[in-house]
Image (cartoon, rainbow, N blue to C red):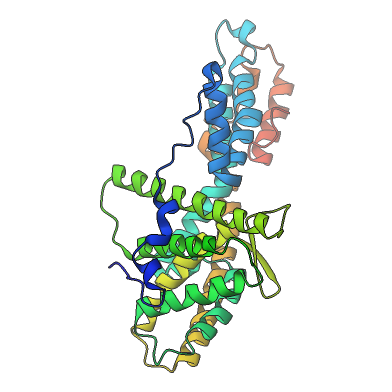
Length: 339
C-alpha cells in the first residue's frame, strides 16, 4: 500500500520540490585508470559506513594475513601448503569477525518479524519519537489514517530538527520528501527474487545518500555541526540522520499497523506502544549479546577437525610437546593455540 501525502503543500505532493532527489547520479563515473580497484574499495567503505570500514580492515589486516600464515606454516617441511592449518584459520576468521554484525542482525530481524519493526528502532530514537508523535497528532481526531500520521509526523520532525535554519530552507522539503519515500517503501510489499532485492537495496542506499547530502548542505549553509554535518538536533538530543533514515520508516510502519487494531484513546495507545517497543528492544539487545557470546564459543567446534594442532604438521615434535599442545588446545577451546 502506497501512502499519499496529505498534510504537505501541493507543490510537495506533486513532486515539484523533489527534482534534485529524482536526478540520477553515477558516483563512479570518474575514471582513475589503474587505480580503479582502490577507488572501488574506497567507494565500498564510504557507502557502507562502519560495516564497510570494519570488514575492510578485518579482512585485509587480520583475516587474510592469518589465513596466508596458516597455509604457509611449515611449508618447506611438508613440501606443500599446510591445508589443515590454513583451513582452520580461514574458517575461524571468516566467522568470528562478521559474527559481530550478522548475529545481532539476525536476532533483531527475528524480533522484528515476531514483535514488529519497531524492534529494530534504537531506544534513543523511540524516546525521541514519543514526543514527536504526541505533538504531531494533537490536531488529529483519531489515529486510523496512516497517511495523516506519516505526514504530520514528518511535519513536526522537520520543524523541530531544522528550527532556526534561515538559509536553504528548500532543502528541508527535500529531506521531508526523501523520508516520505523511504517510509512508503516500508509499506510496500517487496517483489520476490534476489534481483529485485538488490535493486531495492540500491535504491534505498541512493536515497539515504541524497538525504545525508541535503542535511549536510543545510548544516553547512547555516553554520551548524561543522565537524559532523549529518547531525540533527531535536530538543537536547543530537542524532545522525542516517540512523533516523532507518528508524523512522520502521517505527511508523509498526505504529500505523498496530494502531489500526486498537480502540484505546490516542495518548493511552502512544504511551503503551512506546513502553512495549522499548521493552522489546532491550530484550532483543540482551538476546543479541547472549547469542553472539554463544556463537563465539561454538566457533572452535566448527573448524577443529581433531585434537592435534595442525601447526605441528611437518615438524618432528616430541610426544611431550604434542601432549602439552593438545591439552592447551582442548582447555582453551582452540583459542590462541598458534600465538
